[in-house]
Every structure is written in C-alpha cells, then in structure tokens.
Length: 314
Image (cartoon, rainbow, N blue to C red; front, side, top):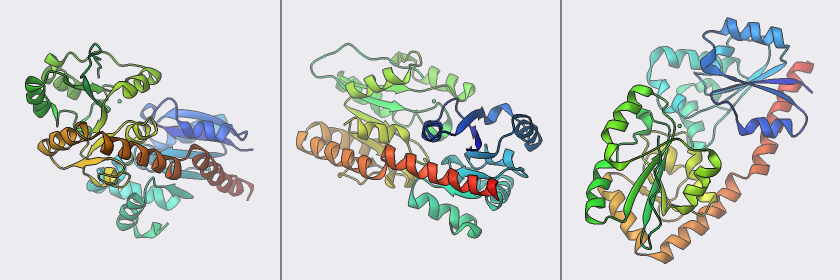
C-alpha cells in the first residue's frame, strides 16, 4: 500500500476518507504553504511519499512539476474557468497535465473544456438566522468571499424585495477567502447583520431550515453547496453558468436564472407552487444519488490510486 501525499487547498478533503478506507496512508498539505516545486520535492523525499494527488490544476498541480513520484490531478473549477485566461498559468497547467498520470473532471462539460484547451488530454461570512416566523422565507447563499463567487450579485434586488416583503431574507454564509473583498462585502451588506462563520454541521442545519439554497457565482467547477442542498431536499436557485447548468436541469432538478430580476421571478413562482417545489426536490435527490453517489465516488478514487500504485511497482 503506497503512502499517498495529497496536495490540497483545504485542511480536510473527502478523498482522504475514500483512500484511508482501503488502507492507504494519507498526508494532506495546504498548497498555500509552499512556494515552489523544490519545496514539495524536499517534502516528498523527507516523508518518503510514493504517490500524490493534487486538487486544482494550477494552485496544486504546479508544485508537483518535475515530481519523482507518480501523481494525478483533480480539476477545481477556477483552473478551467478562470486560470486558462492567463497565458503563463495556461502554459503551466498544460505542462502539469503532460506529467500527470490522470486528471479528474467533475462533469462532462469540464472535461470538454479541458480537452479544448489542451488537445493532448483527449482523456468559504457571516450568518444570521432570523427568529422563526410562520411565513419566513430564508434564502441561503453559501460561498467563500471572493469575486468569482459574486456574493453581492443579488443583494440589491433582495434589499428591495425585503422592504416590500419583510419575511424574505438573504443569508450569506462562508469564509473570508480574500480579506480585502471580505471588507468590501461586510461594508456593503452591513444592514443585513451577517455574523460569524459556522461549523459544517450547523451549516447543514441552516440549510434544512432555509427555503432555498442560492448560487450566484460568475463561474463554477462543481458546487458542493448545490449538491449538498439537493441531497438535503432543499430547492436550488443558481445562476445560469456552464458549471451550474451541468448539474441542474432547469425546472426539473432546480431553477437557473440569468439576472437578479429573473431570480426574484423564479423564486416567487417556486413559493407559490408547492407542487413544483416537491417535484424539483424529489428529482434533485434522485439525480444526486445516481450521479454523485458516495459509494461510486469512493470506488472511482480507489481505482485511480491503484493506477498510481501500479506506477510505483513498475
């Protein structure tokens, strides 16, 4: 059983559970803690890692360039949607893909985008929960505070809607990924009284209490918040961008909006049509179980690591 070095952006990742379940020894490292491949090379040598997984083609993958151990890449979303627009990042990511033994794309669309860029691979501010009221309608936006997540996109239209209908609330939950942008958001939405980051279990509890989960990102790879909402039987309203459209079928497994005004229109339709709400929730649950099964994902990652193990043995 090879010792797996997982190069990740968060202190914990579900892939670790998948791999440790079959006996692999995993060590997770934050990509932001390292500056160049030589630091990673020294880490690999000191810890005697035998294989690696990098999450995010640029942020994680670039540090594995020239690695002496076999490695695989898991696309993050920002890499395919945003980093490809920067010439140097594009070049680096292409080089990483050439060295990687495999790359994991969350959706067929993401795979197509990657293949179009590199022909060679045709292979986290605050939260406030109002007191319970009979007619409360709570919309929950879960995201890291950074520009690509566009957390202010719906604030103006929500403010106007809330003035007319005080039982309507927008709650934004997530970490301050960029402190400069976080301060901008905090100043902008100060009157909404958003407070404190919360643990995942409490986040799930908040999601269960809300009317719908909202995604207003400019770009996405695959939104975990959307998939978790589907699994928790909570309707999803998401901005109509490729990453969201890849996992949401409009008016079947969720609702897709193109602008703030359409968001309000669709939200009101959902609130006034309990049958539509039930149908969306039911079909979304089926979709998640079929296409994002924990067991299937576990097996897939285990099989991918077996490829790395075979490379080690060779």
